[in-house]
Length: 171
Image (cartoon, rainbow, N blue to C red; front, side, top):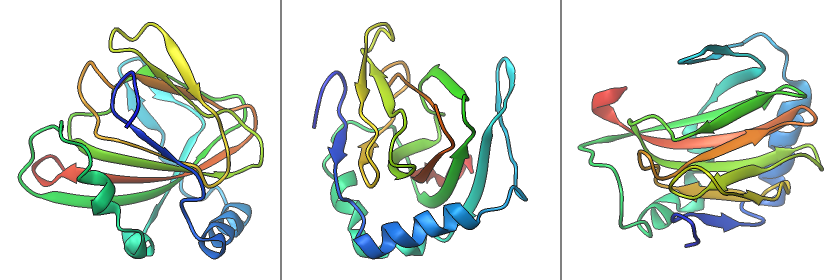
């Protein structure tokens, strides 16, 4: 678990077969489902989401990673959400902390070969350190309000797989 706030970075997270399957899904993905995120400043364009069955990650023991984090938001019951995200070329998602209903977040960089990763900031949200983009690199954390500041940009269409455990009361 790393600084400036607890997170895990792991390379080669998915099996080569699962990674290839997701990369092919990205190539075949048509822009039929476009659900832009709503932010305080309005719609953040360029974020396309395709809901997936969380069962495709059943062999990856995600609970073992989740249990490594001792500091978490309170929750009663958890729901799993899995989303394939396409961020359009030139899009940005400004510095933020995840929504209060997110208890655990796992993002896996899928494609392309080269792009921009995630920038994590200190707890003041000022000094940022990049997590380099690498296909099949996983980044995990338990989001905390006013602590887990991060942002990301895209120099080319950017595909990620996002797995969240969310508080059932908030979904």
